[in-house]
Image (tube, rainbow, N blue to C red; front, side, top):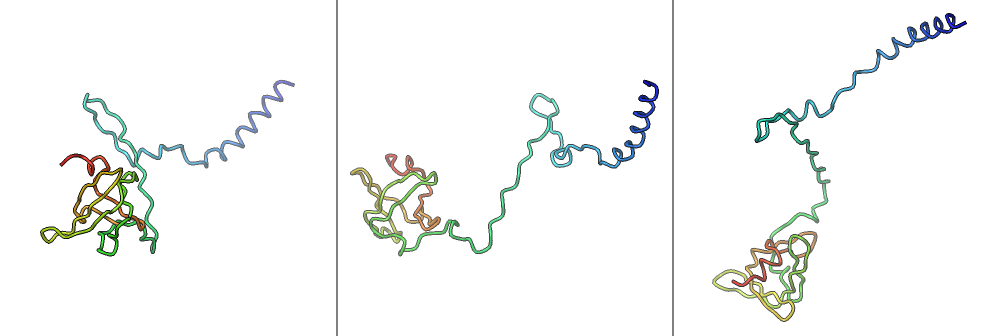
Length: 138
């Protein structure tokens, strides 16, 4: 009985082997993308693998930064920094030495920045400097 069972199991395994052999071998997908690198201690390690960002879709330019025009610079318009923090509101726009300057107010304080340091992103005014940099003493 046990010899018959052993023989049947062996026969089934022999018939299944060609099906197993058809599967491709397991391959590390990162092996061809990231070659090994040598770290500062001289040890070989894998380079990090980074995924490329998705491509922008055609016709969706509303989130692209652009220089501001005089029409964008109106009193009361909110200005944020690159992190999204509100820097303040435009109090006044004036020319100084041929350059357009923007006076920003917030919390009872005012500061002046060149209009060239502002961009329009997704329809909102954004400072190229952080909130801390805009309000730091000059």
